[in-house]
Length: 67
View 1 (cartoon, rainbow, N blue to C red):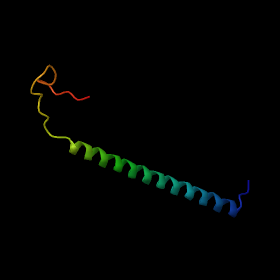
View 2: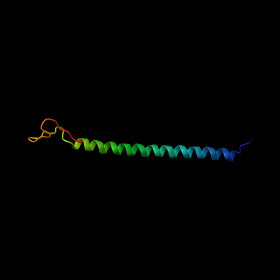
View 3: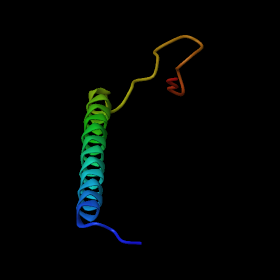
View 4: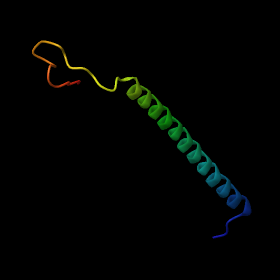
């Protein structure tokens, strides 16, 4: 089986293109994950540190429960 130099070059170029596409996809995924982490952190920081108990009533006077 004789492989021409042109076919070899085309195979190497195709492999490099696939590697570049994969690197770009990983980069986009990392950016999306960083954005989600930033949003989640902002939501957690927006919550008050200690929630007071309800002053009266049947619910929330002994345990705070948020669903």
